[in-house]
Picture 1 (cartoon, each protein chain N blue to C red):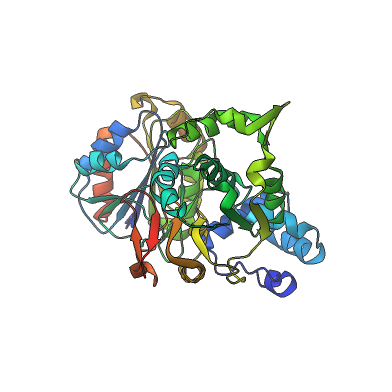
Picture 2 (picture 1 turned 60 degrees about the horizontal axis):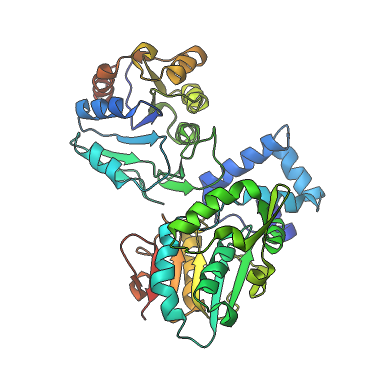
Length: 260
Length: 191
C-alpha cells in the first residue's frame, strides 16, 4: 500500500481494512498471481497495470435509479427547491460508470431544469469514467433500470432515453451535454466548486472512520447553505462532526439539508 | 473441550427462516453476539427485525456501518450489502459484486469472521438451494471455529446442508430444535 502512495500518489491506507483486503485477495485470484508479493511487484514495475488495479480495487457496482424511493424523494422534495435557483450545480462524487449521474440528468430534464444545470461527475477510476462518458450499457440491464425508473415516479417511456443497437443501449447525448466528467480522488483532492446538491452513494462505506469524516468535511465545505447532501442507504452523518448542521428530509432516505 | 464462543454466525437461504426463529427462541442471553446472513429478495426489511425480535430476549437490529459488535445482540445483515468484520470488531458494509449470485453472501461474512474471531466463532449453515456458505464454513473450520450444519433430512431445501456436510466435516449435524440447546451449552463453556 505504501508503494502506491510513494510511486503513484494513490493512498488507500484510510480505507476500511476488511474491504480493501478482500478486494486485493480477489484480484490476486482473478489475475492468477501466485501470491500477494507478485501482485505488488507487478504494480511497482508495470505502470500500465495500475489502471487495472484501481478498477478492480474500487467497487463499481451501480445501476440507474438505484433505490427508486431515494430518487422519488429527490424528485418530489429537492428538485422543486433547486428549480428556484437561476443556475444549479450538482456534484456526483464517486460516480463510477455514470448510471446515477445519468439518472439525475433524466430527473432534471423531466423537471425542465436540465438546461440550467451543470453536473460534475467525478471518480478515482479512469476506466469507469470512460464508460460513464460513453453512456453505453448492456441492453439486458434496461428492464431493471426501467422498473426502477417507474418506481421512482417516472411517467415517460424509459426506452425513449436510449437507442438500442445489438446488445447495447446508448443513452441520448442531450442527457450528457451538461455533465462534466473528471478524475477526483476524495482522499487527496480538495474542493473545486460550490454546489446545491452533492450525491455520494456507497463510497463512504469503503472508508475508515477518519477518512469518512474527512470526506464529509470536504462535502460540507463544498455545499451551499440550504444545499442537499445525499448518501447511500446505509451511510450516516449523525455521528460525524458535521451532523449537527444538517436536517434529514425524511426518516427513510439518506438526504440531508444543510441548515447552518 | 471447553469452548468459549464470542460470535455465532447463522447462514440461511431458502427455507431457513423457521429454523432461525426456533433457534432464537431457545437461545439464552450470554457473552456473545449473533450475526444472521439471510438470502432474500432485495428490499427494505425492517419487518425481518420485528419478526426475529418477537422471538428472543436478545436485542435484534440491522447491522450498521462501522458499528461495534456488542454481546447479547442479534445483528441482521442488511439486504443488498455484504457484511465484513474489521479487526477492531466493527462492521463494514460492502456493495460489491454478488458472490454465488447472492448479496449478502454467507461466504463473505463467514470468511471475514473466521479471520477475526478464529476459534471464538461458531458458524451454522441451514436450509438452502445454493452453495453459498460452504467455503465460508471451511474457513471457519480451518481457523479453529465450530461448525454446525442443519440435518439435511430436516431441511425444507436440503441441497445446501447436504453439500456442506459432504465438503466440511462439521462438529455437529443437528435438527432445528437442537441448535439453540447446543449454543446454550457452548456459551456456558461446555461442549
